Amino acid sequence: MKDGLTMLDAIGPYEVLRNISNAEVLFVAEKKGEITADSKFVHLNAKFGIDEINEADILVIPGSAITFLREINNVKVMEWIKKINQTTLWTTSVCSGSIILASTGLLNGLEATSHWKPMELLKKFGAVPKAERFVEQDKYITAAGVSTGIDMALYLCNKIVGEAKTKAIQLFIEYDPKPIYKSGNYSTAEKNVIEEAEFILLEEAKKEPELFEEIKGEI
Amino acid sequence: MKDGLTMLDAIGPYEVLRNISNAEVLFVAEKKGEITADSKFVHLNAKFGIDEINEADILVIPGSAITFLREINNVKVMEWIKKINQTTLWTTSVCSGSIILASTGLLNGLEATSHWKPMELLKKFGAVPKAERFVEQDKYITAAGVSTGIDMALYLCNKIVGEAKTKAIQLFIEYDPKPIYKSGNYSTAEKNVIEEAEFILLEEAKKEPELFEEIKGEI
Image 1: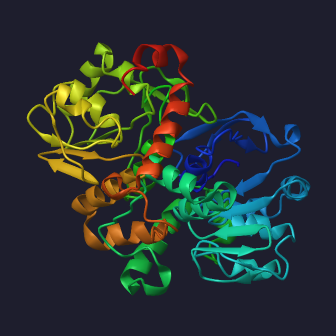
Image 2: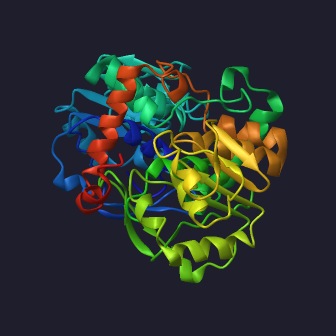
């Protein structure tokens, strides 16, 4: 995690996986301490820095509105991900977290998904983009945008603790989703809705003026 | 918000509402500073204390695994909720947040919902429990457990900014939910699944030993 994090990318999977009996969930940032979300409205206190954590059964890499574009050049973070990956049973990502994961080279030749907006960037790092809610390849599970981490985590949970306990966690968090619209899927979204969503991203991007200057031709 | 918060109760609605153009979202705690979630695994930094905030267009009251049972006796918090409510267009809650809201007396005679577990407690404060995903009464919208805040916030968003922008936010967070099981609804859940979910709550409750001692006969 780092400043610029999309909160639900992290909190969705957390709220599922933390309910596995005896699970221990650590929020790890490049440097421990306060992490400000992409919106600038909410702040996490990360209790662990990457220097302190050397292993994990499950790694979840959340994404961000645009600051992941910085992380894909962050060698220190890349090296840490590769180190932790050697210890994991599952290495996962949500949203643009898959671009960060791909930048390590670990998804080379594998299918992966991401938020619909940066999806094509996966190719730059040798991964094969696939527009699905989540994609499993060996021990890698990449999820699409933001809220998809909840579905991905339930899927993963099912592999770990089985059907009864997974259903219980789903009931505990009352995940019986009934959105008023069916508008969460890029492949079937209306053109004007996509344009509005692109506008939201643009507004988000402007919250990072320096980075925005660098990349505004590309988004 | 306060220690014991269920993170997704707050982050679900936040991730929807913060994407409304020009929205300003504040995380307000009884005392500003670090807030530890019910799981003890994640920590928010609340930048505002209730003494500093005197108005809001929308109030969202998140719940907690069990510490809401303390808040329903917290006169200072009750008085603040009533004060803010005088300024709101919408006063909302997620999960056991509705029990806190009801404890102020504001839901007296109104229908409301909550997480399935503490639902009956609404009656103690004069509200009429209704097992729905969310319940709207006048300007009050109460949502059921944890993840339901996302659906509630999209519904509210639609009232504020209309269909196209709401659909765009849904697309931006890729909320096209496809859980592997249909197990999030208490009224249709299997008996063994409910028992497992009750067990999860019991484990949660034990993380608050003092409070657990007080209430263990009731949960």
